[in-house]
Image 1 (cartoon, helix red, strand yellow):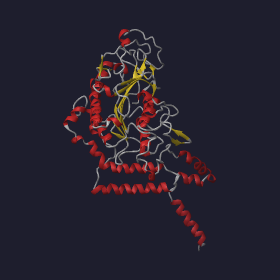
Image 2 (tube, rainbow, N blue to C red; image 1 turned 45 degrees about the horizontal axis):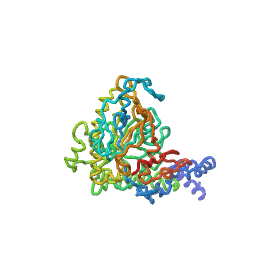
Image 3 (cartoon, rainbow, N blue to C red; image 1 turned 120 degrees about the horizontal axis):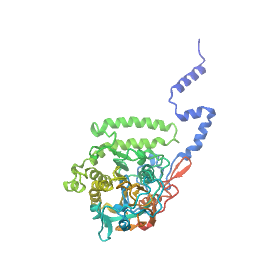
Image 4 (cartoon, helix red, strand yellow; image 1 turned 30 degrees about the vertical axis):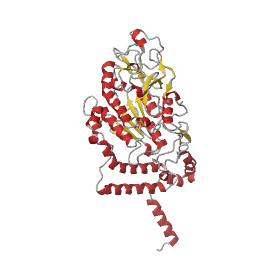
Length: 491
Protein backbone atom coordinates (compact mmCIF):
# COMPACT_ATOMS: atom_id res chain seq x y z
CA UNK A 1 0.00 0.00 0.00
CA UNK A 2 1.38 3.38 -1.03
CA UNK A 3 1.65 6.32 1.38
CA UNK A 4 0.62 9.82 0.42
CA UNK A 5 3.79 11.95 -0.11
CA UNK A 6 2.61 14.66 2.29
CA UNK A 7 1.94 12.03 4.98
CA UNK A 8 5.38 10.48 4.44
CA UNK A 9 7.00 13.92 4.87
CA UNK A 10 5.11 14.43 8.11
CA UNK A 11 6.28 11.05 9.43
CA UNK A 12 9.88 11.86 8.54
CA UNK A 13 9.60 15.18 10.33
CA UNK A 14 8.17 13.49 13.43
CA UNK A 15 10.94 10.86 13.45
CA UNK A 16 13.60 13.56 13.16
CA UNK A 17 11.85 15.56 15.89
CA UNK A 18 11.73 12.52 18.18
CA UNK A 19 15.48 11.87 18.06
CA UNK A 20 16.52 15.52 18.42
CA UNK A 21 17.96 16.35 21.86
CA UNK A 22 15.32 18.11 23.94
CA UNK A 23 16.27 20.94 26.25
CA UNK A 24 14.19 22.25 29.13
CA UNK A 25 13.25 25.22 26.98
CA UNK A 26 11.93 22.87 24.26
CA UNK A 27 9.69 21.29 26.88
CA UNK A 28 8.37 24.68 28.00
CA UNK A 29 7.60 25.63 24.40
CA UNK A 30 5.77 22.43 23.55
CA UNK A 31 3.61 21.90 26.66
CA UNK A 32 0.72 23.82 28.25
CA UNK A 33 0.21 25.89 25.11
CA UNK A 34 3.71 27.35 25.54
CA UNK A 35 2.86 29.44 28.60
CA UNK A 36 6.00 28.21 30.34
CA UNK A 37 8.09 29.60 27.51
CA UNK A 38 6.30 32.94 27.74
CA UNK A 39 7.06 33.14 31.46
CA UNK A 40 10.68 32.22 30.86
CA UNK A 41 11.02 34.91 28.24
CA UNK A 42 9.70 37.49 30.68
CA UNK A 43 12.26 36.43 33.27
CA UNK A 44 15.24 36.05 30.97
CA UNK A 45 16.05 39.74 30.98
CA UNK A 46 16.02 39.70 34.77
CA UNK A 47 18.48 36.82 34.78
CA UNK A 48 21.01 38.38 32.44
CA UNK A 49 23.60 40.07 34.60
CA UNK A 50 25.33 43.29 33.67
CA UNK A 51 27.71 45.26 35.84
CA UNK A 52 26.98 48.96 36.15
CA UNK A 53 29.13 50.92 33.68
CA UNK A 54 30.86 47.70 32.61
CA UNK A 55 30.84 45.78 29.31
CA UNK A 56 28.56 42.76 29.26
CA UNK A 57 30.72 40.20 31.12
CA UNK A 58 29.04 37.06 29.82
CA UNK A 59 29.42 37.47 26.07
CA UNK A 60 32.71 36.34 24.52
CA UNK A 61 32.85 39.25 22.10
CA UNK A 62 33.06 41.67 25.03
CA UNK A 63 35.87 39.67 26.62
CA UNK A 64 34.80 38.69 30.17
CA UNK A 65 38.43 38.58 31.36
CA UNK A 66 39.68 41.68 29.55
CA UNK A 67 40.86 44.58 31.69
CA UNK A 68 37.92 46.80 32.59
CA UNK A 69 37.67 50.55 33.02
CA UNK A 70 37.35 51.39 36.72
CA UNK A 71 34.73 53.74 38.14
CA UNK A 72 37.42 56.12 39.42
CA UNK A 73 41.24 56.15 39.51
CA UNK A 74 42.47 53.08 41.38
CA UNK A 75 45.09 53.09 44.15
CA UNK A 76 45.58 49.31 43.96
CA UNK A 77 45.55 46.82 41.10
CA UNK A 78 45.48 43.59 43.08
CA UNK A 79 44.92 42.09 46.54
CA UNK A 80 46.59 39.39 48.59
CA UNK A 81 44.47 38.21 51.52
CA UNK A 82 46.38 36.51 54.33
CA UNK A 83 43.50 34.67 55.98
CA UNK A 84 44.16 33.59 59.59
CA UNK A 85 41.23 31.21 59.98
CA UNK A 86 39.90 30.63 63.47
CA UNK A 87 40.09 34.09 64.99
CA UNK A 88 43.44 35.57 66.06
CA UNK A 89 43.25 37.54 69.28
CA UNK A 90 43.63 41.27 68.72
CA UNK A 91 44.37 41.96 72.38
CA UNK A 92 47.30 39.52 72.17
CA UNK A 93 48.72 40.78 68.85
CA UNK A 94 48.09 44.41 67.79
CA UNK A 95 45.71 45.93 70.38
CA UNK A 96 47.27 45.99 73.89
CA UNK A 97 44.99 46.52 76.89
CA UNK A 98 46.81 47.75 80.03
CA UNK A 99 43.58 47.58 82.01
CA UNK A 100 43.50 43.82 81.59
CA UNK A 101 46.88 43.69 83.31
CA UNK A 102 45.53 45.61 86.29
CA UNK A 103 42.21 43.73 86.61
CA UNK A 104 43.32 40.22 85.62
CA UNK A 105 41.12 37.60 87.30
CA UNK A 106 38.29 39.99 88.16
CA UNK A 107 34.74 39.68 86.78
CA UNK A 108 34.20 41.61 83.56
CA UNK A 109 32.12 44.77 84.13
CA UNK A 110 30.90 44.74 80.50
CA UNK A 111 27.65 43.23 79.30
CA UNK A 112 28.43 39.96 77.59
CA UNK A 113 26.92 39.02 74.22
CA UNK A 114 24.74 35.97 73.79
CA UNK A 115 26.28 32.79 72.46
CA UNK A 116 29.45 32.67 74.54
CA UNK A 117 30.43 29.18 75.63
CA UNK A 118 31.76 30.50 78.95
CA UNK A 119 29.81 33.74 79.57
CA UNK A 120 30.99 34.11 83.17
CA UNK A 121 34.72 34.01 82.42
CA UNK A 122 36.90 36.44 84.33
CA UNK A 123 39.18 39.05 82.78
CA UNK A 124 42.29 37.45 81.29
CA UNK A 125 45.45 39.47 80.64
CA UNK A 126 47.66 38.84 77.63
CA UNK A 127 50.49 36.34 78.24
CA UNK A 128 52.71 38.39 75.90
CA UNK A 129 54.39 41.76 76.22
CA UNK A 130 54.08 44.58 73.70
CA UNK A 131 56.74 46.90 72.33
CA UNK A 132 56.52 49.98 70.15
CA UNK A 133 58.21 49.66 66.76
CA UNK A 134 59.29 51.93 63.94
CA UNK A 135 58.90 55.65 63.56
CA UNK A 136 55.14 55.29 64.00
CA UNK A 137 55.56 53.65 67.41
CA UNK A 138 52.75 51.18 66.78
CA UNK A 139 52.76 48.52 69.52
CA UNK A 140 53.05 44.88 68.47
CA UNK A 141 53.22 41.87 70.76
CA UNK A 142 56.14 39.47 70.88
CA UNK A 143 54.05 37.04 68.85
CA UNK A 144 54.99 38.95 65.66
CA UNK A 145 58.60 40.17 65.95
CA UNK A 146 59.25 39.91 62.18
CA UNK A 147 56.05 41.63 61.04
CA UNK A 148 56.77 44.31 63.67
CA UNK A 149 59.84 45.34 61.66
CA UNK A 150 57.45 46.46 58.91
CA UNK A 151 55.00 48.24 61.17
CA UNK A 152 55.58 51.57 59.40
CA UNK A 153 53.95 50.00 56.32
CA UNK A 154 50.87 48.80 58.20
CA UNK A 155 47.46 50.38 58.65
CA UNK A 156 46.03 48.67 61.76
CA UNK A 157 42.23 48.70 62.11
CA UNK A 158 41.38 47.96 65.76
CA UNK A 159 37.64 48.60 65.54
CA UNK A 160 36.34 45.81 63.31
CA UNK A 161 32.99 44.20 64.09
CA UNK A 162 30.70 41.76 62.31
CA UNK A 163 27.81 39.33 62.82
CA UNK A 164 28.19 35.66 63.58
CA UNK A 165 29.28 34.15 66.87
CA UNK A 166 30.07 30.88 65.07
CA UNK A 167 32.91 30.31 62.59
CA UNK A 168 30.65 29.35 59.68
CA UNK A 169 28.60 32.54 59.85
CA UNK A 170 31.55 34.87 60.31
CA UNK A 171 33.71 33.20 57.65
CA UNK A 172 30.94 33.51 55.06
CA UNK A 173 30.34 37.12 56.07
CA UNK A 174 34.03 37.87 55.57
CA UNK A 175 34.30 36.15 52.18
CA UNK A 176 30.89 36.83 50.60
CA UNK A 177 29.25 39.56 52.65
CA UNK A 178 26.31 37.32 53.55
CA UNK A 179 26.03 34.33 55.87
CA UNK A 180 22.41 33.41 55.08
CA UNK A 181 22.42 33.00 51.28
CA UNK A 182 24.79 31.75 48.61
CA UNK A 183 26.54 34.83 47.25
CA UNK A 184 29.62 35.45 45.06
CA UNK A 185 32.89 35.61 46.93
CA UNK A 186 34.89 38.79 47.34
CA UNK A 187 37.55 37.59 44.90
CA UNK A 188 34.91 36.77 42.27
CA UNK A 189 33.37 40.26 42.58
CA UNK A 190 36.81 41.85 42.18
CA UNK A 191 37.67 39.76 39.14
CA UNK A 192 34.24 40.53 37.66
CA UNK A 193 34.77 44.25 38.14
CA UNK A 194 38.38 44.49 36.98
CA UNK A 195 38.96 41.64 34.54
CA UNK A 196 42.37 39.96 34.37
CA UNK A 197 45.87 41.22 33.56
CA UNK A 198 46.97 37.80 32.28
CA UNK A 199 44.81 35.82 29.87
CA UNK A 200 46.78 32.65 30.61
CA UNK A 201 46.05 32.56 34.36
CA UNK A 202 42.94 32.81 36.53
CA UNK A 203 42.19 36.24 37.91
CA UNK A 204 41.49 34.74 41.34
CA UNK A 205 43.58 32.02 43.00
CA UNK A 206 43.03 30.62 46.49
CA UNK A 207 45.88 28.66 48.08
CA UNK A 208 44.92 25.73 50.37
CA UNK A 209 41.29 26.85 50.88
CA UNK A 210 39.04 25.44 53.58
CA UNK A 211 36.96 22.33 52.92
CA UNK A 212 34.43 23.19 55.63
CA UNK A 213 32.89 26.42 57.00
CA UNK A 214 31.54 27.27 53.57
CA UNK A 215 34.02 25.33 51.47
CA UNK A 216 33.78 26.28 47.81
CA UNK A 217 31.44 29.18 48.66
CA UNK A 218 34.47 31.03 49.99
CA UNK A 219 35.83 31.29 46.45
CA UNK A 220 32.70 30.51 44.45
CA UNK A 221 31.05 32.65 41.78
CA UNK A 222 27.43 31.85 42.82
CA UNK A 223 25.28 33.55 40.15
CA UNK A 224 28.17 35.39 38.49
CA UNK A 225 29.40 33.73 35.26
CA UNK A 226 31.51 30.62 35.84
CA UNK A 227 34.70 32.23 34.55
CA UNK A 228 34.85 34.38 37.71
CA UNK A 229 35.03 31.49 40.18
CA UNK A 230 38.27 31.26 42.12
CA UNK A 231 40.76 28.56 41.18
CA UNK A 232 41.90 26.42 44.12
CA UNK A 233 45.49 25.35 44.57
CA UNK A 234 45.21 22.29 46.81
CA UNK A 235 43.08 22.48 49.94
CA UNK A 236 43.47 22.78 53.69
CA UNK A 237 44.48 19.11 54.00
CA UNK A 238 47.12 19.24 51.23
CA UNK A 239 50.76 20.20 51.84
CA UNK A 240 51.41 23.18 49.58
CA UNK A 241 54.51 21.53 48.14
CA UNK A 242 52.23 18.79 46.74
CA UNK A 243 49.31 21.04 45.81
CA UNK A 244 48.35 21.33 42.15
CA UNK A 245 45.58 22.88 40.14
CA UNK A 246 42.95 20.19 39.52
CA UNK A 247 42.77 18.48 36.12
CA UNK A 248 45.88 20.26 34.85
CA UNK A 249 47.62 17.95 32.37
CA UNK A 250 50.96 18.62 30.68
CA UNK A 251 50.65 19.42 26.96
CA UNK A 252 50.89 16.40 24.64
CA UNK A 253 52.55 16.85 21.27
CA UNK A 254 53.76 20.11 19.73
CA UNK A 255 51.90 23.03 21.29
CA UNK A 256 49.53 20.60 22.99
CA UNK A 257 47.84 19.52 19.77
CA UNK A 258 45.96 16.62 21.36
CA UNK A 259 44.43 18.74 24.13
CA UNK A 260 43.66 21.50 21.61
CA UNK A 261 41.62 19.06 19.51
CA UNK A 262 39.81 17.78 22.61
CA UNK A 263 38.97 21.31 23.76
CA UNK A 264 37.84 22.34 20.28
CA UNK A 265 35.46 19.37 20.15
CA UNK A 266 33.95 20.12 23.56
CA UNK A 267 33.69 23.82 22.75
CA UNK A 268 31.91 23.09 19.48
CA UNK A 269 29.29 21.10 21.39
CA UNK A 270 28.98 23.88 23.97
CA UNK A 271 28.48 26.54 21.30
CA UNK A 272 25.94 24.43 19.41
CA UNK A 273 23.95 23.98 22.60
CA UNK A 274 24.19 27.68 23.42
CA UNK A 275 23.21 28.77 19.91
CA UNK A 276 19.89 26.92 20.16
CA UNK A 277 18.76 29.83 22.29
CA UNK A 278 20.88 32.99 21.90
CA UNK A 279 19.21 34.51 24.98
CA UNK A 280 20.74 31.84 27.19
CA UNK A 281 24.18 33.17 28.14
CA UNK A 282 24.88 30.69 30.94
CA UNK A 283 27.28 28.63 28.84
CA UNK A 284 29.49 31.54 27.83
CA UNK A 285 31.28 31.51 31.19
CA UNK A 286 31.85 27.76 30.86
CA UNK A 287 33.27 28.21 27.37
CA UNK A 288 35.67 30.87 28.61
CA UNK A 289 36.69 28.63 31.53
CA UNK A 290 37.61 25.78 29.14
CA UNK A 291 39.79 28.13 27.12
CA UNK A 292 41.51 29.44 30.25
CA UNK A 293 42.13 25.90 31.52
CA UNK A 294 43.78 24.97 28.22
CA UNK A 295 46.12 27.97 28.35
CA UNK A 296 46.93 27.29 32.01
CA UNK A 297 48.41 23.91 31.08
CA UNK A 298 51.42 25.63 29.58
CA UNK A 299 51.83 28.62 31.90
CA UNK A 300 50.74 27.58 35.42
CA UNK A 301 53.38 24.86 36.01
CA UNK A 302 56.15 27.44 35.54
CA UNK A 303 54.75 29.53 38.39
CA UNK A 304 54.48 26.54 40.72
CA UNK A 305 58.14 25.66 40.15
CA UNK A 306 60.27 27.49 42.73
CA UNK A 307 63.59 26.16 41.42
CA UNK A 308 64.42 29.50 39.81
CA UNK A 309 64.12 31.38 43.12
CA UNK A 310 67.37 32.24 44.84
CA UNK A 311 68.43 30.52 48.04
CA UNK A 312 68.26 33.89 49.80
CA UNK A 313 64.61 34.31 48.79
CA UNK A 314 63.66 30.80 49.88
CA UNK A 315 65.40 31.37 53.21
CA UNK A 316 63.68 34.70 53.71
CA UNK A 317 60.25 33.09 53.34
CA UNK A 318 61.27 30.07 55.43
CA UNK A 319 60.69 27.59 52.60
CA UNK A 320 62.07 24.14 53.38
CA UNK A 321 62.35 24.55 57.15
CA UNK A 322 59.95 24.08 60.03
CA UNK A 323 57.68 25.65 61.11
CA UNK A 324 57.46 28.09 58.18
CA UNK A 325 57.61 25.69 55.20
CA UNK A 326 53.87 25.61 54.56
CA UNK A 327 52.91 29.26 54.87
CA UNK A 328 56.25 30.42 53.53
CA UNK A 329 55.74 28.47 50.32
CA UNK A 330 52.18 29.82 50.08
CA UNK A 331 53.30 33.44 50.48
CA UNK A 332 56.08 33.02 47.91
CA UNK A 333 53.64 31.50 45.41
CA UNK A 334 51.28 34.40 46.13
CA UNK A 335 54.01 36.90 45.20
CA UNK A 336 54.67 35.01 41.95
CA UNK A 337 50.96 34.95 41.07
CA UNK A 338 50.56 38.66 41.83
CA UNK A 339 53.61 39.50 39.77
CA UNK A 340 52.16 37.50 36.87
CA UNK A 341 48.94 39.54 36.86
CA UNK A 342 46.53 37.62 39.12
CA UNK A 343 44.06 40.08 40.66
CA UNK A 344 43.18 38.36 43.93
CA UNK A 345 45.25 35.78 45.78
CA UNK A 346 44.23 34.28 49.10
CA UNK A 347 46.63 32.35 51.32
CA UNK A 348 44.76 30.52 54.08
CA UNK A 349 46.29 29.51 57.37
CA UNK A 350 43.59 26.95 58.14
CA UNK A 351 42.14 26.24 61.59
CA UNK A 352 45.19 27.45 63.51
CA UNK A 353 43.82 30.34 65.60
CA UNK A 354 40.76 28.92 67.38
CA UNK A 355 42.16 28.56 70.89
CA UNK A 356 39.38 28.04 73.39
CA UNK A 357 42.06 26.40 75.50
CA UNK A 358 45.87 26.48 75.60
CA UNK A 359 45.92 30.02 74.22
CA UNK A 360 49.61 30.56 74.96
CA UNK A 361 50.97 27.44 73.29
CA UNK A 362 48.41 27.62 70.48
CA UNK A 363 48.87 31.25 69.46
CA UNK A 364 52.65 30.94 69.78
CA UNK A 365 52.73 27.93 67.45
CA UNK A 366 50.46 29.64 64.92
CA UNK A 367 52.37 32.91 64.92
CA UNK A 368 55.72 31.16 64.42
CA UNK A 369 54.31 29.49 61.31
CA UNK A 370 53.26 32.77 59.64
CA UNK A 371 55.31 35.66 61.10
CA UNK A 372 58.46 35.18 59.03
CA UNK A 373 56.67 34.42 55.72
CA UNK A 374 54.37 37.46 56.04
CA UNK A 375 57.30 39.74 56.81
CA UNK A 376 59.17 38.32 53.82
CA UNK A 377 56.18 38.92 51.54
CA UNK A 378 55.92 42.57 52.64
CA UNK A 379 59.65 43.10 52.09
CA UNK A 380 59.60 41.29 48.73
CA UNK A 381 56.63 43.24 47.38
CA UNK A 382 58.24 46.49 48.49
CA UNK A 383 61.63 45.65 46.95
CA UNK A 384 59.99 44.78 43.61
CA UNK A 385 57.94 47.97 43.54
CA UNK A 386 54.68 46.03 43.89
CA UNK A 387 53.55 47.15 47.34
CA UNK A 388 52.43 50.59 46.12
CA UNK A 389 49.67 49.07 43.98
CA UNK A 390 49.15 45.79 45.84
CA UNK A 391 46.77 45.76 48.79
CA UNK A 392 47.71 43.33 51.56
CA UNK A 393 44.93 42.28 53.96
CA UNK A 394 45.67 40.30 57.15
CA UNK A 395 43.02 39.00 59.53
CA UNK A 396 40.52 36.34 60.54
CA UNK A 397 36.77 36.07 60.68
CA UNK A 398 36.64 37.56 64.21
CA UNK A 399 38.77 37.99 67.34
CA UNK A 400 38.84 36.57 70.87
CA UNK A 401 37.28 37.68 74.13
CA UNK A 402 39.23 39.48 76.88
CA UNK A 403 37.67 37.03 79.33
CA UNK A 404 39.02 33.63 80.20
CA UNK A 405 37.43 30.47 78.87
CA UNK A 406 38.23 27.36 80.88
CA UNK A 407 41.71 27.39 82.36
CA UNK A 408 43.60 29.32 79.69
CA UNK A 409 41.55 30.04 76.55
CA UNK A 410 39.47 32.74 74.90
CA UNK A 411 36.06 32.49 73.22
CA UNK A 412 34.98 33.96 69.85
CA UNK A 413 34.51 37.72 69.67
CA UNK A 414 32.91 39.31 66.59
CA UNK A 415 32.05 42.47 68.55
CA UNK A 416 35.53 43.99 68.40
CA UNK A 417 38.69 42.74 66.69
CA UNK A 418 41.73 43.73 64.62
CA UNK A 419 42.80 43.43 60.99
CA UNK A 420 45.57 45.26 59.19
CA UNK A 421 46.21 46.47 55.66
CA UNK A 422 49.39 47.45 53.85
CA UNK A 423 50.22 49.06 50.51
CA UNK A 424 47.63 49.84 47.87
CA UNK A 425 46.87 53.42 48.92
CA UNK A 426 46.26 53.01 52.65
CA UNK A 427 47.90 55.16 55.30
CA UNK A 428 51.18 53.63 56.42
CA UNK A 429 52.17 53.48 60.09
CA UNK A 430 48.60 54.29 61.07
CA UNK A 431 46.11 53.05 63.67
CA UNK A 432 42.40 53.45 63.00
CA UNK A 433 39.66 53.05 65.59
CA UNK A 434 39.71 51.36 68.96
CA UNK A 435 37.94 48.86 71.14
CA UNK A 436 36.87 49.57 74.71
CA UNK A 437 39.37 49.47 77.57
CA UNK A 438 39.08 45.70 77.78
CA UNK A 439 39.01 44.89 74.07
CA UNK A 440 35.47 43.50 74.06
CA UNK A 441 33.55 45.88 71.77
CA UNK A 442 34.49 48.17 68.89
CA UNK A 443 34.18 51.64 70.39
CA UNK A 444 35.60 54.50 68.29
CA UNK A 445 35.50 54.83 64.49
CA UNK A 446 33.89 51.42 64.14
CA UNK A 447 34.40 49.49 60.90
CA UNK A 448 31.85 46.85 59.93
CA UNK A 449 32.73 44.02 57.56
CA UNK A 450 30.59 45.71 54.87
CA UNK A 451 32.65 48.88 55.38
CA UNK A 452 35.86 46.93 54.90
CA UNK A 453 34.56 45.44 51.65
CA UNK A 454 33.41 48.85 50.39
CA UNK A 455 36.83 50.32 51.15
CA UNK A 456 38.74 47.50 49.45
CA UNK A 457 36.65 47.96 46.30
CA UNK A 458 37.15 51.73 46.46
CA UNK A 459 40.93 51.33 46.60
CA UNK A 460 40.67 49.11 43.51
CA UNK A 461 38.80 51.86 41.66
CA UNK A 462 35.36 50.26 42.06
CA UNK A 463 32.30 51.96 43.51
CA UNK A 464 30.65 49.30 45.69
CA UNK A 465 27.20 50.75 44.96
CA UNK A 466 27.70 50.51 41.19
CA UNK A 467 29.45 47.14 40.96
CA UNK A 468 26.19 45.21 40.60
CA UNK A 469 24.87 42.11 38.90
CA UNK A 470 21.22 41.64 38.01
CA UNK A 471 19.90 38.22 38.96
CA UNK A 472 16.32 37.02 39.45
CA UNK A 473 14.98 40.54 39.10
CA UNK A 474 17.28 42.23 41.60
CA UNK A 475 20.62 44.04 41.48
CA UNK A 476 23.10 42.34 43.82
CA UNK A 477 26.40 43.63 45.12
CA UNK A 478 29.11 42.53 47.56
CA UNK A 479 27.97 44.99 50.24
CA UNK A 480 24.24 44.33 49.69
CA UNK A 481 22.50 47.58 50.81
CA UNK A 482 25.21 48.45 53.33
CA UNK A 483 28.80 49.65 53.36
CA UNK A 484 30.64 52.90 54.09
CA UNK A 485 34.02 53.75 52.60
CA UNK A 486 36.51 54.32 55.43
CA UNK A 487 38.18 57.39 53.94
CA UNK A 488 40.15 57.93 57.14
CA UNK A 489 42.53 55.08 56.31
CA UNK A 490 43.22 56.17 52.72
CA UNK A 491 46.48 58.01 52.12
